[in-house]
Amino acid sequence: MADEFENGLLSLLGNLRRYAISLCRSADIADELVQITCEKAIANRQSFDPATRLDAWLFRILKNSWIDMIRKKRTMGTQIEIDNAPTALVTDGNATTEAGLRQSARPLNCCRKTSARYCCSFALRSSPTRRLQMSLMSR
Image (tube, rainbow, N blue to C red; front, side, top):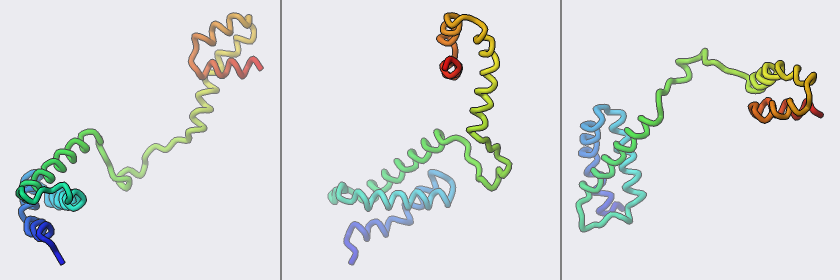
């Protein structure tokens, strides 16, 4: 048994869809906006004041959802389908790290021939990776 809120919501679906299309110029996105609006309206039904107009409340929810969608798209960046990029570069994190450690270990071989004092001052000025290597070499 539907109450007044549900009947009002159902009767305004066409108007909500037309308003959504006027905002986004896409039927698919408009349908998504209407669905989001209905979900939010039903979830926050207790905050609706029956003394106010239901259509104004729903249109405000729809417009705020549209603004949220635009903001989300701006911060999301460019998206591509994974099927459209089958040759995406895949790297092995362990192999990359080990190669970097081997690369940075080469200059440290000269430290074995110098004093420990020089090695410590060099290690303090070095990157964290070199400091780790210095501590491993001293063991």
